[in-house]
Length: 96
Image 1: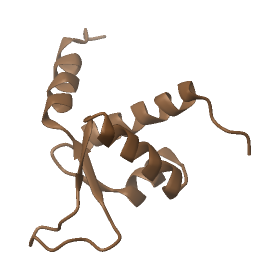
Image 2: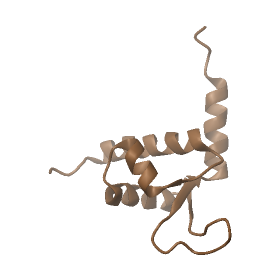
Image 3: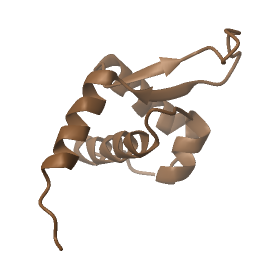
Image 4: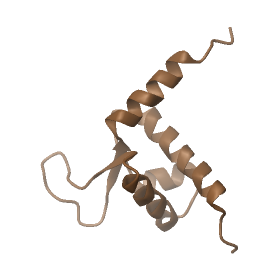
């Protein structure tokens, strides 16, 4: 399989951010995100880690009770990114 260009990876990351925005304030596991964008879990995880380095999303490594996940991770938008997305959604003109 040929490697993806950076432009295509950026587009897929935008899809991930949009999906997480639609779920906010909830979070999603890596497997849920990979199913939504129809990509391999390992590839999705690498994109999620890249978004984390850019401080666009937050990794959640503990469950509600405070116990660490052993293999799974949940992800959500950072508060700053959520606010930016929300403002963009509010400023779009209505078609009706």
